Image 1 (cartoon, rainbow, N blue to C red):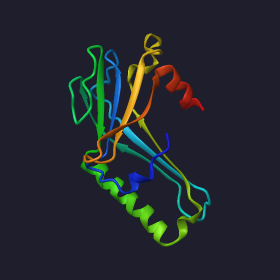
Image 2: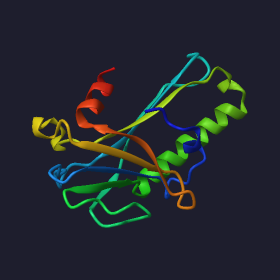
Image 3: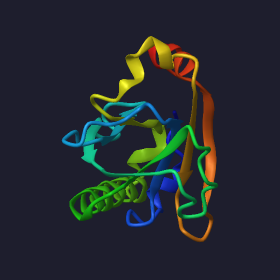
Length: 162
């Protein structure tokens, strides 16, 4: 998915991603999810290519939380947020992009994208291929969550290959 420009202004402590999944999808307790950030400048000399994997903390819930609706009985929310070290790294990235823009080097733009990597999540189980996946993003507490994408896991995997 394309990363909204608002991420450059967002408070890293308030940024969250929530994914509602089938209740049978259980992340392994020792796996650390990451927010994968990639920036590819349109012009190589304008800015550096950025590739970062920021560790996230994850909580699992089926009850209403943080303004999200309660998950149905057979579903759960996976809620991702930044621990302090990742908040600091995102702040550094935000400052870098602001500096590039202020220096006029960012005129060429580029592609800024993000993804969540959660190793060991049972998304490869064929039984779950046609279950629903809902992604919601929160840039600030004040604005709350908005839906990014919803569909089946099969659709999500197909989209990821393109």
